[in-house]
Length: 589
Image (cartoon, rainbow, N blue to C red; front, top):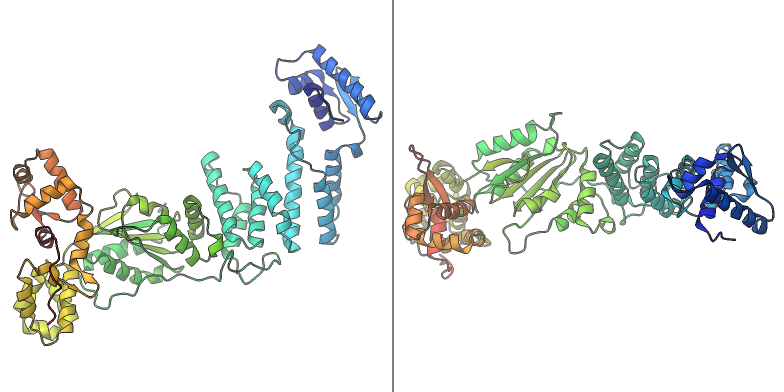
C-alpha cells in the first residue's frame, strides 16, 4: 500500500499529523514542497492522486475534504499509530492506582505503536511541524515513565538500550538523560552513569553555557553516594563489574623517619595546598610543582608534605610514580586506570579511551577533598589528563624540569642542602655521637657529596653498615675524583643513575658544549666564556646553557652586580661527564 510518489506521501503525512483539522493550502505547499517552490495546481494534483489511492487501497475508510481554502483528512484514530500511542499514554496517566506491573505493561503496549522516527525521511519543513515535536516529546516522556517503573520492578536492562538510543537523538533532553543515568546505575554500571553525566555537563556548558538541571544533578549525586551493597531501586548490584566496595584511598608511601631540613619549602607547600583549601573563590584545583636536581629529595619532601596534609583531605590521597626519568615513562591512561579502580570502579567498567577515563576520573573527584601526588613527572603533557577539575582537590607534582605549562602551578624549587642541614642528615643516619667525634671529617664528607641529600644518605648508610669505620676513611675514598661516583652507591641507591637519566635528556650539541666546559675545571664562567671556549655565538651559547640549567648540570653561581651572570657546573655532574663509565664496584670494607 505504499505511495510511490514523494509529494502525495508527504501530503498524507502532514494530513495524518493533523487528522480532523483543516490545514490551509499555503501551509501545505510550504511543508510539502518547501518555501516558494510548490503551486496550487501541484497541490491539487497531489490531492487528486492521494484521493484515488485512498479509494483503491483504504477501502473508503478515509477521505480528504476541501474546506475554506484548505484540506482536511477524516480518518478514525484507530487506524493511526500515533493516535493509538497517545491514547494509550493518556490512559496510563489515569492508572496511578494500578499495580506497577500493569502500568508497565500498558506503557509497553503504547511503546509498541512506535515504529521509528516521526515522518522519517520527510523534508525539514515537515519535521519542524509543532505536531512532530509534540509527538516526539510524548515518546520521550513515555520512555522516562517506563525507565522509572523498570527500576522499581528490578528490570532496568529492559529499557536501557532503547533509552540510550533516544538519548543520543535528543542530546539536550535533560530529564531523559537523567533517567539514562539512573538506568546505568541500576544495571550495576555506575562508571557509564558518571560518564553519561560528564558528557551531558560538557555538552550543556560548551553549546548552551548552562549547568545541568537539578534533576540530572540529583541522578549524578545518587550514583556518587550510593552504597554498592544496597540495591538501586531494588536492583542488586553487579560486583566486580561496575562499582566495588567504597574505599577511601590512602596511597601515599610511608613518611621518612629521618626527614631533615626543607623547612621553608614545607611551609610554602602547606600554606599553598592546605591554607587555601577552604577559599571559596578559588576556581580550580590547587597545584604545586616541586622541582630540583636528581637526588635533591623531591619525592621525600612530597611524601612528607602529603602526610602533613592528610587531615585536610578527608576523602583520601592518590599517588602515582610517573617514571618520567625512566626509559619508558608511565602513560596517563595506565595511571588513570589505577586511579579509577582505587576510587571504586570495577576493572571491567574502566573505559578504554583516554579522554573517557579522564572524564570519569574528574566526575568521581568532583566535590571531594582528595590530594593527588604525581611523582617524577616527565612534562606537562603527561600530567594534564591527571589533573582533577574540582576546586576541592589539590595536586602535588615532583619533576626535574619546571612544569611552567601547567596553568596555576606553584613552582617550589629545592636544591642541595646547606652545610648545616647536610651534616644534620648525616648525623641522623650515621649517629650523632659519630659525627660529633669527627666534625671536620663530617663537614668535608658532605661537601664532597655536593651537599646532595641522596649522596649524603648513601654515605650515612655506608657508615651504618660499617660501624668500625671512622668518617675520615670514607672521606679519603671520596677525595679520589675518578672513583667518587662509584663510591656514592649502596644497595639500589646510586647518584650516577640519576645523573645518567638527566644526561639522556640533553641534546648532542649541548652535550658537546658540556664536555668542553668540564675541561675548565671547577670554576665560574660567563656566557662569553662559553661562546669563546666552544666557538659559538652568544645566542647559541645561551641556548646550550639553558639546556644545561634545565637538566641541573649547570647552575647560576652569581647574578653579578653589573648584570653579568656567572655560571658553574654542578660538581658531581662534572665528574659524571669526565668519568662517564663506572669503575669496578666500591670496595667492601
